[in-house]
Image 1 (cartoon, rainbow, N blue to C red):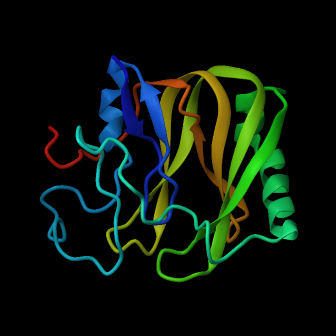
Image 2 (cartoon, rainbow, N blue to C red):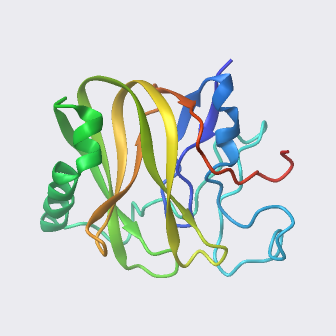
Length: 200
């Protein structure tokens, strides 16, 4: 049975649900947002909202850091810059292996504490499905939600027809790539886990 799990989560990152095989069920806590269970700030009031982990009665909780769809907007030069960064990214070149893609959506990625546009979320529609064993880039925000560090997710991706990509304008780099909901993602060895509250 497949589970809907979160691949990318953060106080300012888009949360993308993916289907994974039973072997990948531990991915739910891999990139969870907010402090782990037992942390002094766990359960405490936070100056910035955080995304709660998925649960049976709330499998796709709202991410308060999802890129803004109202307020700040992207101008065409920012979209062109992000597209150029994506086109030049060596990881995406390797993952798509010449498979053509089209940018079908671009929305601002804003700082969680301000309206500053720090990057963009692009949706790439692939001309054909992608299947590969790979190391997906991801991000995890700190407890304060003020900065993130980059992570790597060792996974087998099958039949991805679109990718959600986060581009950080400050580093001019692709910092996160997530397959679409239709893809099956199976965890491979080598990942660092952050258990979600209530999980072993």
